[in-house]
Length: 80
Image 1 (tube, rainbow, N blue to C red):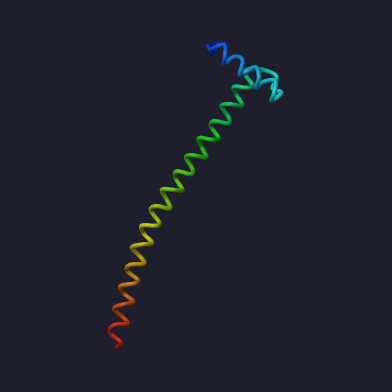
Image 2: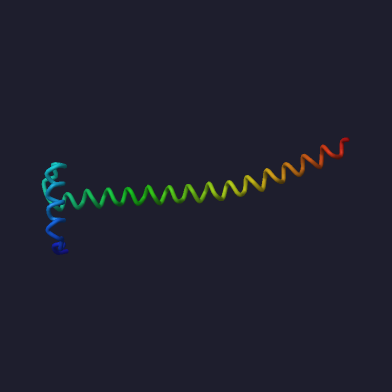
């Protein structure tokens, strides 16, 4: 794989981060950035999966609570 074309501004950002983070090479900065982005993406994917699971469970819980409530009303109503 060859060099990556970046603007002068991006080149300066990479160099500033390289010095600030004490990473010896520009490629190291890019590797660190990729690792961070992958981690962030994985976390967001997990959050989305959790939200979806909570949504599904909430709907199922609501139906179950309604069924229990109806069953309880029917049982109490027949005792009187």
